[in-house]
Length: 400
Image (spheres, rainbow, N blue to C red):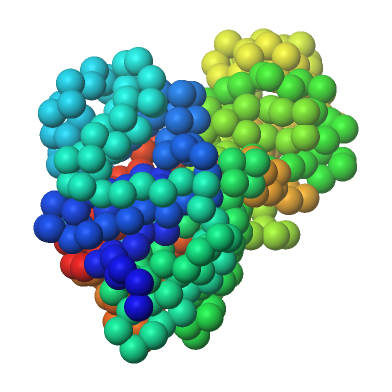
């Protein structure tokens, strides 16, 4: 047999590079294979080009999975502070934006440079423009078939990512490898993705594209649970688009959305908007409604349109009270999402029942590991998915 690597890492993204670095530090002979022409392509476009590389408020509650406990072990053993220490070691200037999110002051390229420097120090070999076709298990090693050769390794770490942003080169090869070994996969779907209006809502709202407001978005909880599940809520910005709604609040709630399921938006969180219109001598007109709404919560164009679409037939007190309730529970049943092309991550993936939560190794296939986005662990918006990449990568790299 040709030379055998100790570890072959499939994927030169955040998780794969971290796994390779940790394995290399332990003296393992490591090769990283990736079909792309450069390391960390998704890192480079993240955070508006400044990379929201972690979140200081990371807890297991910030992740969605069929097993909500699975991520606990890896997250506890490689924390945001551990990655911040690496950032500071490399002299990368960073700042706290909001809600625990940390960004590079200058450019995401600095995070890629950090990973490359650490990989060089750990004697990791990175082989780009190498597309992996399949992985099979032999007596003493795995055979990794690429587009132009076959490599052999005693351990394989699959860090091939999900299906999101195919223009960046996303493929389903990680799922194919899992299936070839008989591993279960939770149904995949686009997550952290804009929602698309049904035609009737599109006619009412889409010409307001670009208008935003702070809202509380809510939907039923984990899609893995039965219909009677608790609400999940996010208070952030909503953005109207030419096809539906986006913005942080919508991206967050989209990870929990399932077809034909409604989402609700509180358009005036923490406020009572129309209470003055309940007074006996109050002026009750659409213009007055729009005034109160503009004065409390919504931008002018949004407020005016909301009033136009919701003016009551009569102006009795209980009609105004019903209108107040409607303002706090704007109910939308999306026609769908913008799909993987606009999704920041892929939800679902390799079932956590197949993996050891401490090492990320497949229970049925010793020496085969799955990490990062390809696994059924999906973080909220705001640096959590990067932290899962670092943590799961470190767990596998320290186990091979």
